[in-house]
Image (cartoon, rainbow, N blue to C red; front, side, top):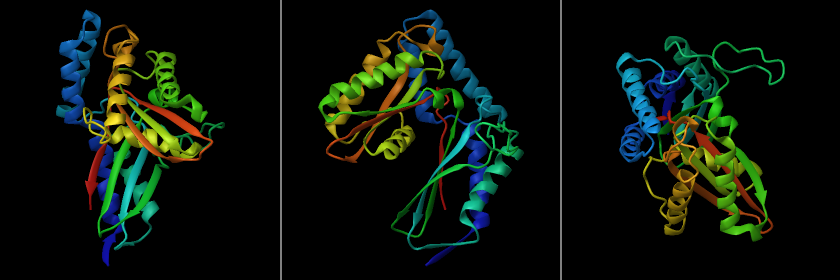
Length: 279
């Protein structure tokens, strides 16, 4: 049994909170540069160019990529041979507090959804934990901005709606969203599971490397088709027209009930921020 001090978890989350907000992933930057060359709209091309410049400035000056530094979402894999010395949950929350304080990141969380009083430290974070083999802890942080999160949707389709029904729902969601989620987007699609599980699948899909293919050829083809159809909508960068509405579509699936076909779409703005560390 390996023992990990909760203070090490706090330190890791503190750093992840800042790094995720300062540094855009190389996969996202590569996709932005690729689509900037392909963009047909002069305005769309200029917007993509500005997004790339913004990422360069954020990294060089260690400033947030966006003023909305997000709700802190953490995906945690805990090895079954790990013992955490101290309070695991509080260690993560303290890491978020320190990261958002020391990194001068905007605090965006309210205590109560209707009374709307700010917590003042961007906690509590949303933590999703799974137990895995091994003696390590893997922490992945996903700062989720309100603009893109608000444009996400879920629907319980009938099994007879099938693949076509799923595609229509995804495209409809992007059209309804328009420029609100700050495209170009990474589109996470969850299919299957239950009402609550499918939303988590869609969000987890955002963590995949942009440009990667689903291991199942069926879903890889579906991702390609959806990306093409989304970019045919003409929404374009920042919703001002063009070919580049999305950089990627990522699908995750899970077994589901014979009477159900849940589908969820979790949109992610062009600041597709997430960082991972293994302790």
